[in-house]
Image (cartoon, rainbow, N blue to C red; front, side, top):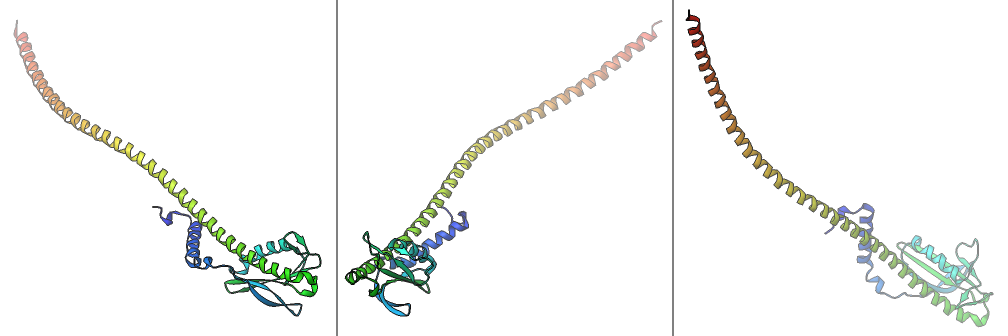
Length: 242
């Protein structure tokens, strides 16, 4: 088993974040996107529209929301809140006279997005259809955001899993290397033990030989003394011959 302490700090943090996300949000993701009719003030006028509430701060939602609005129609440059969208595109049909307004609000850990219109800026025959399309668009965006959020967590989870697998493989390889080294060390230990035993026997043999050598030296020393005495005796006898 891989210890979390052996994984990088950033990857551990991501791992914990993913686990927390799964634990806290699992029940919520089983719910469907709820689109609600809601009025918002635009240019001092209360406009009917549709809104959804998303689990996430505005910083999490805004990028995908802006991209989504560009798909709905032509986002008017320099428009702030509400964002003004002209020439909306519904199912491939562009409505040149129509205008859509988009709002985004943050409330704590949640963000609400809204799309609405005013009937006077549309052809009368297109108003009901446009409203139905706005409701549909809001639902589609809610699905997209939720799926995108879960997919990001899946990607992060996969990244954490890949990091764990990589670390696991590294430790497996280390284990193989250490096992190989251990086997070599065991073999070397056996050879050293044999060498030590051989050295011990050789040491004992050398001690015996050394003792024998010493005795032989003592014996020869004694023989030399005796020979010297004989030589001195012979020399004395030689001297006395007249």
